[in-house]
Length: 197
Image (cartoon, rainbow, N blue to C red):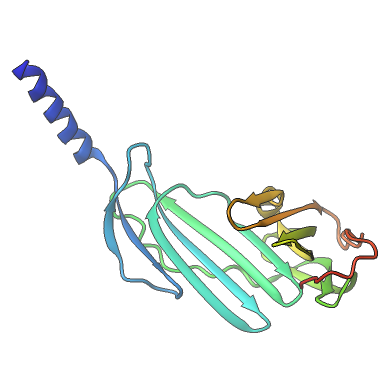
């Protein structure tokens, strides 16, 4: 019995020693004060996630470092609002010291329709940037208020547009198309609810 307990204690110690250690922090800026965190069993990578938002020239940033897994990088643009999420991962101790990375702002030649907050009809054209190679038409509902979104999207963003966020009364659905200016259809014909972007 004594031998079994000793073996279990040694196994637990070895498992603890083998767990990955990552830098950890979250801040609404380019940088953050990091601490060290041990990853749960099964999490074998550290991440640095950079989120940048540019709304009519007003830029906001957020950085997050922790244990985790990166999904694909996403990028969306609705009129004068551009949102990019860039995630980098690595798999050695304290490796996630990547600096903040802002989403690409270079025009790529792709264009999509966008709509104004007052009108769901797509009359304006937005020039897409970076990896935004699809046009998006999406409806969103928050607390029962329907909104319509049109603009540019990366292929990774298009893969996650049919979502429902539990506990927030937020859901959004839509579709993406792959040719220039292909998103002119109206999702809510005759609807004068609030629309954004």
